[in-house]
Length: 413
Image: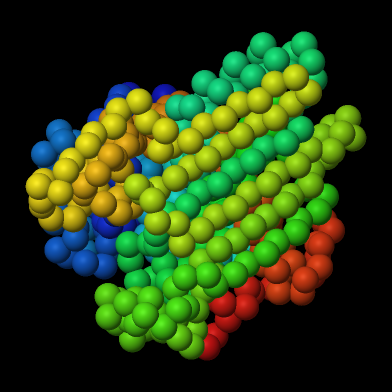
C-alpha cells in the first residue's frame, strides 16, 4: 500500500467493450487519474481501446495479454472490472491472489453493475476484496447521474426538511435490447432484463429514499414482490433475428431470458416508517433510444426526470440518409424524424461523477458511497425478485432460502 493520498491514480481496465469505452470517455471530465493498462480476451479490442485512450490523452496505455501481467506491473494502482458478468468472480480471485502473495501493488478495485450473478458469488466478491485489503467501489452510475444528484439535494434540503421524508421512489429503464450476445444468455449474464437493468432501478431508488449522509443500511428491506415476462423476443421472427445476429448460442425459441420485469420493494427506515420502491425494466421498448424515468414522492412534493425529455432536439426529414448509429442517444432506434439529443451522455447518466468519486476515494484512501457491500445488497434484492417471480409469492427478508438460489433462466440448460 503506497502512502496516501497519491497524486495520480493509475487505472487498469479489465474489459475493452462498449461499457469500458463509455467509462473511458467519461474520464475526460475527471482529474488526477491516468489509464495505464487494459486487459481483455480480444487483442483487437484491446488495441482499439489503447488507440482511443491515446486519442483522448490518457496514454501511454499498455495492452496486456493476461490479467496477471497487468496487475503485476508497476503502472497500475486500481482495477476497473468491466468484463462480462460470468467472468467477474474469476477476475476478482486473480486480483486477490496476486495482491495477497505480494506480486501486485494494486490497492483498489471497482466493479461494474451487477456485482455478481448470485448471492453466493456476490458474497465471495466482498470477501475477496476485504481479505486482500483492497478499497472497493461498486459502479452504479445512476446514483451519480446529474439529475439524481441535483434533484435529491433539493428535495431533502427544501421539502423533506419541512414536511417529512420521501416515501415512494419509482424507477424505470427501458431500451430495445443489449449490444452483445452474452447479455442474452441467462447462464452467462445471470438472468435477463431483471439482472441487467433492475440493478440500476432498485439502487437509484434506494439512494433517493436514503437521507443525505445516512448509511445506505439505514433502510432495511422487508419484502420484495417480482414479476417477469417474455413480451417481444420470444416471438418467432424476433427470436430468429437474435439467432441471425448473435449465432445459435442465443436461442430464444427454446432458452429465452425475460425481456420485462416489475418490482415492488418494501423497506423500513430507522424510525419504523415504511417506504416503497416501484420499478420496471424492459428490453422491449422501441422509442428514440434508452429511456430512464425517475420519480421521488413525499408528503408535499414530487420530483421527476425523464432522460428523453431533453432540452436539445433535432429533426431530420426522409431526405437525410445515413448509416445506423448511436450518435444522438444510447440504444438509438432511428436516424430520421424528431429526435432527442443528450449533449453529454456520460455526464447525464452519471459515469463522469461516478468515476470522479471513485478516483478521489481511492486516491485518498476514503470509503466510496457505493461499495461491494452495496453491490451485494442489490444482488440480494434481485435474487429475491427472481424467486418471487418463479414462486408467485412475496418474499420476506431476511430470506435464507435465497442463499443458494439461481434464477430459472440462469440454470444449466
